[in-house]
Length: 448
Image (cartoon, rainbow, N blue to C red):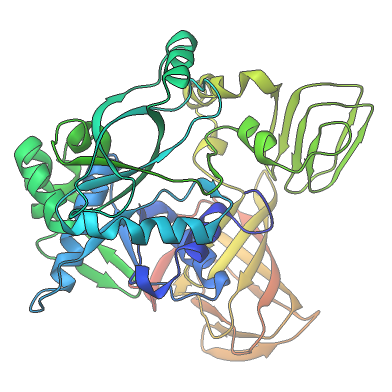
């Protein structure tokens, strides 16, 4: 996030032009509600959210998207082009991005696999590079697109300096444009194992509201690979088109310092931050107060449940921390303090022996499942909005500052019948407070 909107929301907004519709979002199954909620908040059409049962890299992700698009176009004469755009990049000039994408359409329709290249302005070692070759024939494209001579993985600084001096190299943006059929044909030629697994996974797509599900077992059997290594480095159709739209691959926290608005002391600050005699630092809070005194060139990032402190020049080494936390089985690695659900979200406020406190937000018109718990009781206090509560055989309304109690073993449901979000505090008490202590009897979202 570089501002008030998330990177996903910014990506969806800048690609919302009718010329680029319909939009498919590919994400993991466990992130589906968070993605849906972020898209809902943009006010844009959500489109379709294609769920990956397991992480298998960008090549399988693009393959199931291509197959789903072709299935949607079945019975028509459409030959869909596929724009593959990561949602974790910053693009300052959305108009130039759109015009460059549209300019590449002719080359993509002619069968070329277009990758958008960024003209390097520094010997960056964190990006892959593309060496441009001869210009495309005018009949194929009226742009400055060139054949790709070769792809180069992240180089050391000496090679990166040589690439910059030579002038025929671009950074690999990871944004691609090609026809769905061409991509699948290249995949069949170079990685038929991936194509076969994805075809099996999309043979019987299941639709659940805005979510589209593939066969989990078939997709789990798919090899993992990236678009670059599976297809682009092997095909003779690879084409690079320069993109000058203020692009940045925000792969590290220090990259947000690079592109952020810095104060007179070269600090970038976000959220509840107070810095005294500090220089060259990225200081970000998504909740608690951060106070710094007399430090330089630091990353300090605070969320609801974790704090990161590191030298800014060590940002690319954060994988070491993630690996250590996984070894220690820290729940913060896989579980955020805020958890999104199809009806809204809840945020953990506090927890201890035999108790847990949550802030629950229910969207207007939404409802939780009719459910029961074997091991916990719940106390609900309405902060704002109106709640309709089903408790056993009783149904009643609660308004601001009113509360109710749900005993262990009693069937219950929480609904928001109003036009405003419902905010309430839930206090759980009991011998076991895990999320798997839910027995659902009725559910709008197919989770029974």
